[in-house]
Length: 359
Image (cartoon, rainbow, N blue to C red; front, side, top):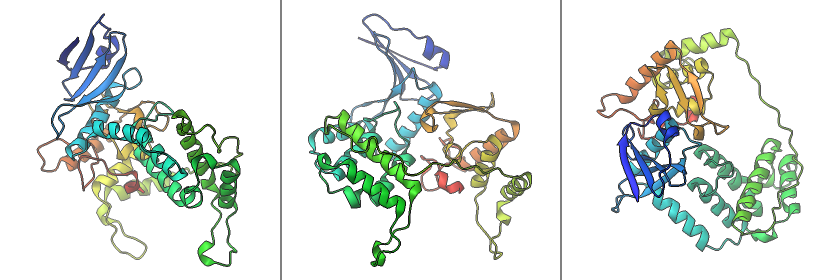
């Protein structure tokens, strides 16, 4: 039996709710319609999203573990999923489709293994660090795989890929081939990406081993060729002052030739917030309204958007609140509905701008 109720959930109520013997409890969030907190009779708490499918019925989509994902993060993820659903996507059906496809489709080659690995990761079926990879991370890994792994190793049978094959690929990437007689075959050394490519192969085969598709991982115990050097760039006070002035009057920006450079005021605000709050552009560009509490002057970044996978509470000074309120007014414009994101995409207000827009 299930016991359901609707209430304005708080962090306190989420942590204090107890399991009921022989009964499943489902609390529906009044602030974010569709978001539910489910508690089994054994005390397992999870966030789920109920939505109306275009095919009929009300599927239930599990968002995450309520002991690891905060209420703010769950609301932000629910808002993102609801935007996808409004565009015609079916997250529950897609997760089921991927699961069935992985189980039914034979995975023979490295290309097919990579396809299945990326599909499992994007749908949440594979969470090696107990969190779904961010879309931008997956897209970056897919580009590296398309450029370096698939052309060289993609047609090999998955069980025949050897450590020597992986090592040879990484060495060729690291050394390059600038003196090849065939100009089309010349390659510059790209040592900085060898570690990333090695990690993709290792993770893909880790997933394949968890699915009993392979028995060994050819990317293990290979020494990294490239030494990672952390970038360090400290802006001077003069540079920050010039940046701030430029963002305050973006319509007056000119390039070296004196031509006007168009920068939207909302984009300029996002850049100002990066400097003011010392947050990365990917966090600022994806700022969700559900993450903000402007009365308390706080911004809780959802863990699925943080590099470390943990929620982060950012205090907001008065200037930051002022900038966010200006950005929200620009985002809403003449629309009746309040925006879900502080910096929505001009093409689709259901998603935020990309971090690349702040480059």
